[in-house]
Length: 339
Image (tube, rainbow, N blue to C red; front, top):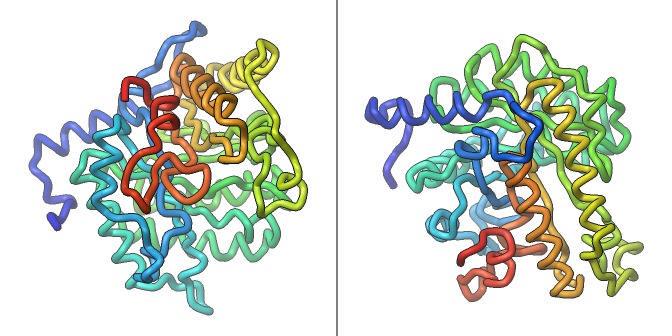
């Protein structure tokens, strides 16, 4: 595999520098038009959250060449869901073998002209055990920020997936500030994604960011109404018993627009670009309603000028059938038309 790092040709590095500058430009204008951050990050998809590729295991349906299929389908970035805590020893040191696999995935994405987002995805621990999360997250970013300092200029960091649960806004703002400080010590110019505290409709107004750091992108996830998007989910004793529920009335659509408009007002006031990092509908929902929802949410995000990433490539909520190595054409058509 071709190694992609700081030794790239100068012309390609200039292109990446331009893309980074575009990505973090402030959102401007109240009208529904794509802002310049869409051109840089654009449409994306979540990958590798639950794949055995990290352990080098047999249960690893994702193939690196699937990144080619992702690019050819019209996506321009991948959000790499990395459970780093799982690969730390008792001293919170990350496994070097796993980090080398992460290097290979980042490089494979870059070769295919996909912008990689490295998302620390340990939501469960961080929502349950806030002190334990704080210790591990700080250690994670010390190691990862140092590892990638001066490398992969197109790589984007995302500090933590879906902070929330037992973590209060004050605790998250404090931890966010600490981790951002750790990253900026070695990566002063790297784009960094920061999440609003995760609720059904994100608590974005409680987010506190340093006013002098303009290389931040604010993310939220959207699964509202969760009874519809998670109906039939077997891992939940509540949702597994719900359904079939439909979606697509004028009231349903108005709710999405109202929720997105609130986020947009915040982004305009704070002059921060917005990234819709996850949205999706579990497979048990009625097919027509599922596709209407996916199409409406993606088109709204496009009109609001936001980059977005669908949840997810394979496993559940899937857009791709790993066993057959083919896209689920109806899902792909809903989120990336003209395929």
